[in-house]
Every structure is written in structure tokens, then in C-alpha cells.
Image (cartoon, rainbow, N blue to C red; front, side):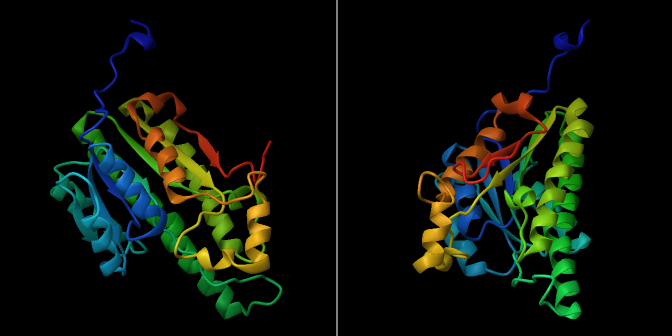
Length: 264
């Protein structure tokens, strides 16, 4: 029997059990909606924004969705979230690692050492370790289920072009991309595909204020389309990477930035 004759685990196209971290608003809300619209059941995770997470949950089409709170910055919180999602959904087929922090700017030339170290610790704890710990826990469950799975990480174009005012953000997002590629190789024998998206600027509540005035004009001008992304556009890319058809894109880091940054 050759490699291509080996039967792959049966991975459903719809009706999947999906955990979206950081889904209270913005891109996370769009991600939860995209999967629910596809006929999947979604665990909507939030850290502290319960009211907004409840709004996300209430607006999802379909039924069987659930709301879960956890601090993914701690190993215990991440493990508890995986356990809760597994119990609420009856298993996990898709994990979307969207939870992240973007701390106040911390350019190295003008930031105190105390603020610098605090920024790095927070970014590493949430953006990188939170993603790593959730991925490990979910992968263990996917392996036990024996039906394959999908893990999609939300990275950033900042991993490639640099983030001079927010270096901890850019560095941790680069690490998320590298983590995803390592997991793609490690988990492929179990039918689990792992990929990442690298979005550019997205019009969300967290950063929408920056689209005003001269700064907003400059940000929109970064793309030849003369605009920034809508959350639903990035969510559509994530949903495709989580689909049965996208298995051969495992290990991919997909740029979703409107040609605002082209890497070679």
C-alpha cells in the first residue's frame, strides 16, 4: 500500500464542533459567525468582556452554541477552556486561536524597562503560550477522537514587516506562525491540518479609532485597494483553512492583507 492509498480520517464539512478563542467582538465575533453560518456548533470564548461575548452568542445562527470564559494566559486557564469546550460540544473538530493582546505601544528607545518587560510578559503569555497550550490540549482530543481536525492560528503581517512601536506583538505573532508550521508536521499523521493567517489592518472596535484623520488615510493607503479589511473577509479565509478541502494547505501562512505587504 502506498502513502496515497491510506484512508484519511473522516473529517466533516459541516456540523463540526468549533472552539474560537477571543470571540467576544471584532474578528473573533466574525469568526464565530462564519462557522455558525456554515452549520457548525461554536464555543465562544471570552476573557473579560462577558456582555460583548453574550451579544456574539445571541447573534449566531443555528443552535448548540455555548459561551465559555477562561484566562488563556495561564496554563490552567487554557487547559480548563479545552476541557469545558470538549464537554459542552461533545468533542472538538476545529480550533481557531484568535485570542491575543496588543498592549500599549512600547518602542524600545522610549519605553522604561519596567513597561518593556511587562509588555513582553503579557504578549508572550497570551499570544504565544495561550496559543500553544490550547493547541496541545485540543490536539490531544482530536487524536483520541480519531477523525482528524483543523487548527487555524490568527497571526499578523507584523510578523514579517516588523512592528517598531509594538515589537512584542510582532515577535509573538512570528512565533505563532512558526508554532503552526511545527504542529502541521507533527500532527499530520493524525489527520490534523494546521495553518495560519497573517492579516493586515482590520476594521474592528479595538483599533477602529485609528482609521480617523491623517492616520486613517495613511493606513488605508497601505493597500492598493485603498481600504482595510472587514472582519468577515479574514473570517472567510480562516473558515476555508478549516475546511476538509484545505488539508493540503497544512503548514501554510496565508497572507490576508489586501497586498498591503508583499513578502518573498
